[in-house]
Length: 136
Image (tube, rainbow, N blue to C red; front, side, top):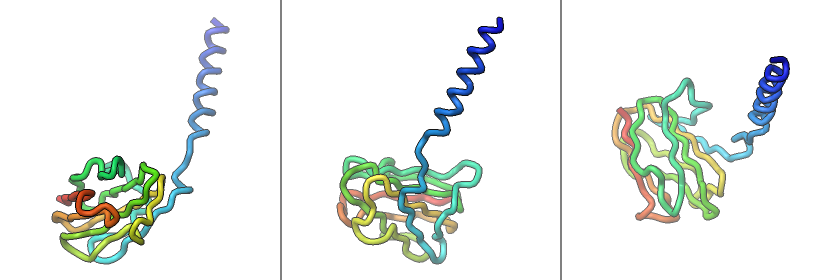
């Protein structure tokens, strides 16, 4: 019985060490978008939000629905540069920065507070790499 207990404790300790060795997002760049209806998200608070990858020269998923104030995190999962730029919708424009400015592993976090439908595109790969964010 003592051997079983020792084995369980060793496995738990190993699991804690392995969990602590994971990477963090602090090395990724994160762009800010200011203005009415759009702002940089510090960190998602308690769930919600959406993640959008950039894979095979597409946004995945390209169309998402979030609640006002939820964080949308775009991540470039490819070795080619991408960007995110608003093409339509309420409020001021948002952008991940320079055209093609997001390198592999870079993230852009966006928080939209105004309800509506927002079109967005990667300017490097437009018009084929585009999507829609619905805030309701």
